[in-house]
Length: 356
Length: 128
Ligand SMILES: Nc1ncnc2c1ncn2[C@@H]1O[C@H](COP(=O)(O)OP(=O)(O)OP(=O)(O)O)[C@@H](O)[C@H]1O
Ligand SMILES: [Mg+2]
Image (cartoon, rainbow over all chains, first blue to last red; front, side, top):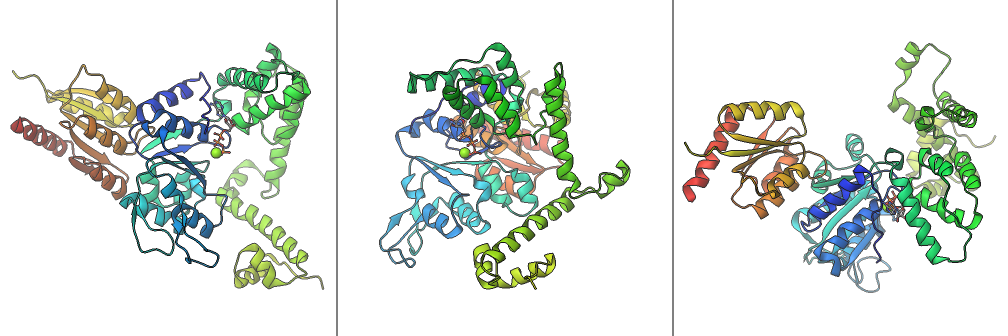
């Protein structure tokens, strides 16, 4: 694995670097949090690279990408014959990562049942592969990452408190890129040079100071990953103007409050207007924005809105799937991974009816 | 007179920090404070002060109290450590697992903590 250096000059990045340096050899469980693309995996790699375990394996598993049973067998491995299809014994990630690092990516998406098992393994330092009674000792350094707010997930009973506290021994929170604009020029410089050296013939240029200012003031909802993609694209298009134009069209729903601070020029004000229109149109699907704000705020509860929004999407998805399978409810329930009973209940609740 | 006992107090709550500071200071302790585990670790590593006792909150950003206790017990085995938490049993249990000498649950009684501190420091001095 090649380690990406943690580029940045902001106070938060410098502090994270210093923290990495201080904890890399403690083997204490680490929880890395932050929005998508902020660099959680980069931080995990740097922790590993600075630790004495860097000569051993760095094993990553994405807890969001696999269905529950597969995730379980990936983590713990299985014996021959543990389930249909287990033709031969297979080691799990806990075994491959022994003496090294186990990076549990997207831990916030781990199903509850597996959270209990994970807690048990972290407490006891032992695990047994599926279909085996034997307990194996494990010596892994666990680094977990998530873009969920786990405090919120705990309140909703989606994440176990005891597991949270056990992982949260060292907590590294990476702020979104818009909160550390100072990092943008150095990130651009780093990736510019990287892509130049990879493709020496490309036409890409560095942004001039005007564009750079614009790039620094953009909100970057996709954070460093999005910035990196822009630089890559620029190498081919060789037009920062075009790149910036695309940016502001791609994510019109994000109203960067930063723009308000420097509304010197007309286009920015106009863009800003568009953002807030998109926002109000989403909100108005669920609440009546024409009422007075007192009345409005009385009706406005995130919980209520969440329910309305998810009901709305669920209803459409259920209708979509039912239409695709010719209203075969038992097939639809399998595709949707809910019980037949739940499907009937939801069809009734959302008034999803077959065409007469 | 003997040199005063040296305390390091760690909490991310400013009010608690200043209350503890005033209280222990008035009793003649030499007190330093830190707002999270990382700041505390730096104070411990900076060898200009040898602390007798560490009093730390548990749930804090960057290095948690549990992390601080684990690191400190390994690197400074003679340091006495008291944990305090307002988050119920789980962090408390982890602090004991990390070998804190004592765990208090918030709200805490300063006099009781002071009793514990002097008891632990005396234990330590008896041994030496
Ligand atoms: N500080 C940084 N310095 C250099 N490259 C960075 C930095 N932060 C992020 N990157 C790059 O940005 C991309 C996204 O980073 P990474 O995969 O670590 O994000 P993440 O937080 O894990 O995102 P996700 O939540 O989507 O998994 C990667 O290509 C990474 O190399
Ligand atoms: Mg990631």
